[in-house]
Length: 116
Image 1 (cartoon, rainbow, N blue to C red):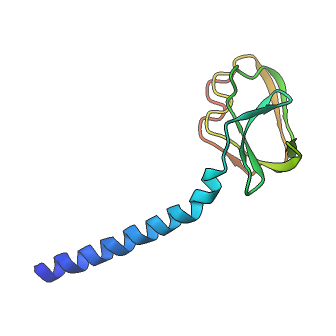
Image 2 (cartoon, rainbow, N blue to C red):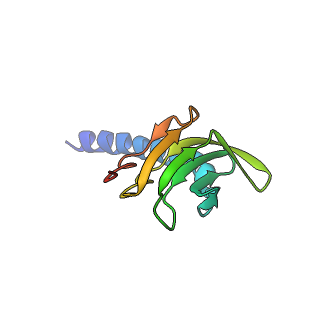
């Protein structure tokens, strides 16, 4: 019985070390995410090291026709718009259309929840 506990503890230690290593590898990307910025009426989370942008919620709800571009430029850096974030357009009742560029490869859950 003691051997089983020792083996199980060793296995758990290896799993925890792997998880910690993955977290440490992702931290530089997460650390570069600044506060959301607004560009041409669309709010973005910018990941500066990877030079990618995620459409996110703004301080007001999106309305009308929204066109998500393939790239944006912020402070002389070009970012590829690759993601529509979780809940980005939630409850945007006055939204009439969203045109999504081919650069967007991921749409978060609830991105368009409660849109009419």
